[in-house]
Image (cartoon, rainbow over all chains, first blue to last red; front, top):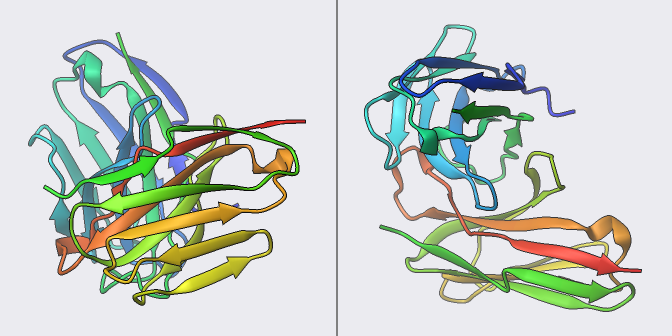
Amino acid sequence: ETGVTQSPTHLIKTRGQQVTLRCSSQSGHNTVSWYQQALGQGPQFIFQYYREEENGRGNFPPRFSGLQFPNYSSELNVNALELDDSALYLCASSPTAGGFSGNTIYFGEGSWLTVV
Amino acid sequence: GQQVMQIPQYQHVQEGEDFTTYCNSSTTLSNIQWYKQRPGGHPVFLIQLVKSGEVKKQKRLTFQFGEAKKNSSLHITATQTTDVGTYFCAGCPLRAAGNKLTFGGGTRVLVKP
């Protein structure tokens, strides 16, 4: 139990639709990162939010967007879904964005997205 | 962009034997982290290495960070069935915006009883 909760756990969407995934970070953690993990691969960094602002982004198109709220929970939005967006989406929470040194990062259990 | 490679991709180990998995980054890292992911589960943080040449132990697991801070290894002694899973290294590049972690492709470990 990491204290990071994600919802929904599983969902199926049709190509072209939009999806919103949610993450509640561990209490006291002001930084949330999102990762995409395709089957059989390592997680890939999508972006990070620190104190409600985007704080770094990986190689993902603009149709991947996010938000962080004052309570530090976060959303990942994906527009115009493509078949290749099918993956496990992981949220990771940490106490600070100023360097992970000495800080444990906690992953949620993920949201499995299938695009058909 | 930065790449992190892990070898081997698969490791079949007889219970009780030792094995090592290796991680190599194309760029110098500020730190490297190791995660374990059980089948159907999420990555679980194991350890972080920060200093050049650092060695850390967790029971039967020994983690090492290379002198050039571009490679790392995980050595497991006396493998047990509970060690089954995928082990990922994840590197944090120097001066990376947002402390972006770049994960390797993982080493999938199967243990033969």
